[in-house]
Length: 242
Ligand SMILES: C[S@@+](CC[C@H](N)C(=O)[O-])C[C@H]1O[C@@H](n2cnc3c(N)ncnc32)[C@H](O)[C@@H]1O
Image (cartoon, rainbow, N blue to C red; front, side, top):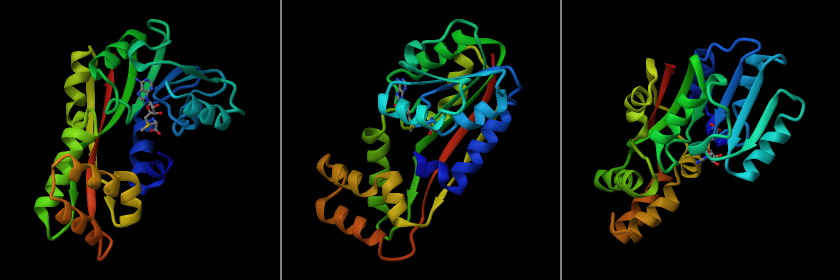
């Protein structure tokens, strides 16, 4: 997560989304699935000491890391909870942020309904999610690249095409969508792409699941670190209001 945030494209979509939230001093901002606190500092700066930031996550290790990072900002509060049943009062939030969380949850529509419940009238929300069906990996063996993407979309990621669905889901939850944008980071480093996209791990799993032939899959993965490397995948961001 920290590596994704450190990539140039990662920084730029995060900065743009934070700007779009148009945070004001004294507001209450919510970060659902705050992880290790990557975005809490930006939210805290936006609402200032007179405001409040609530970070919710279900992973105690993530919350501990976030608490450590935010130790000097007492207006940031961390809550252990599930995005499907937010530990947040009705109509109490001015701004809300969800970045790469809906791709993992059991019911994204329910999470957005929860967001609508806790939103004050006029609340601005910022959503960012990838669409793994847009994953392209350069190789002479195009068929295996496609098989890898198909495995990622159909098996590896729970809600793999959530990116393109965000505007529809946000409208269905009762939000008005103001802006939809797409960012496509390009990976040129096979090692970094392996860490972030799970190329090696998921090639093995795709072979085991019958998405690609064993020797062809192995040769495909080995060839990725042999020459110039190019892979990309698109992330969608949506800004909407209650
Ligand atoms: C990919 S990380 C993103 C973290 C952070 N938003 C960021 O951009 O760095 C996904 C986070 O969502 C959390 N998460 C996943 N499902 C959740 C759920 N149902 N309720 C609360 N948190 C959840 C995970 O624990 C993890 O910290």
